[in-house]
Length: 422
View 1 (spheres, rainbow, N blue to C red):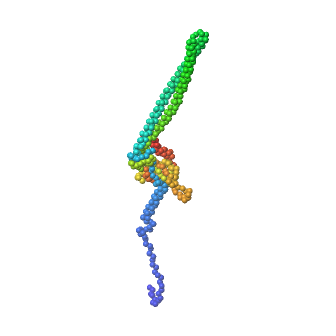
View 2 (tube, helix red, strand yellow):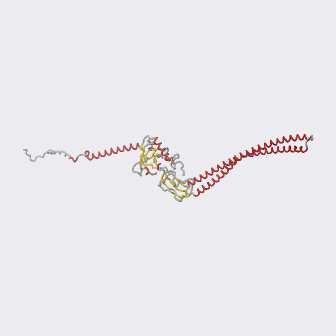
View 3 (spheres, one colour):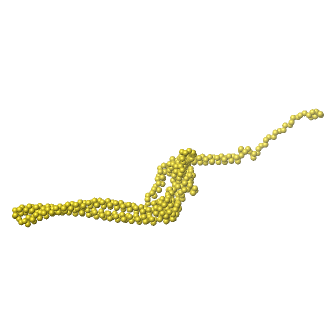
């Protein structure tokens, strides 16, 4: 054992080494955040949502690339303004209201007919007068046609009789001359009496007078024949008068027909079966010819007009299928493209664009597209003017179907183009 030396200076001893404690082992609850199951779940959910969103985004992008969509679309119909034709006057009857369904030829309203009835009576009177004049001229013509040949025949017979009388007179004159010559010679020889000579002289002179008289009668008969032949000129003249009277009768008949048509037009009728959508006049109002008193449309001619941007026309063709979403219905309608207009809607604006003066701003134009609506149970519920969203599938189209559909729409309207008898 070592003893300490008193008063010895202390020596510096090295410091004692403190052993370092090992780091504590982390518990299971203190795992690093990168390995948390909750974070893994969040990442998995986020990735799943991203995949789903990506899938639908790709699907939406592909859908948008293969379809043209527009909200600028409306259900339309060929609305017709019905107005009085050729007549004007006060409305004395109004037989329909708005939303009424009417048939072709049904009376919708009536214009005051009194004045037009008077015109019919006046025109009928003129026709009867013209017809009476025609009948009188035809009777005169018939009479002349019957009389003139008879007069000519009588004149010819008179000529024959006069000619025979001339021949008889000439024969008598010849005989009288022979008697005169013979008895004159005998008288010169005093072989006969003076009285006998005077008798043969008087007989000769009488025979000469008879020849002259017969000749005059023959000449007169010839003039009578010429006069009778002038009857043919009278026939031709009266025949022309008959033609004139017939034309007058035709004109009077046309005037009567016109007056009757005007009277018929006082009854305003439906030009086709349809629905009355608007009344512009009421009972007692004055209506002028050509001024609409109501509007109506044919429900069989409903269609959708979509105004599609020109940048979305690529892929759109007649015959392509269309999906129609109407705000008034919960389920979409189906349709097909009938035709694409040859010009944009701006061409028909009240103030067409004019870029010549400068200040040009490019605006995407819209092209009207006619869409046929597939008929079904909901077809009667469609109304003109309803708004729609149109989704047109791209494709090559079906031109044959589109052409036939356009013809079918035209045929529906052409059924009522012919004038109906009233």
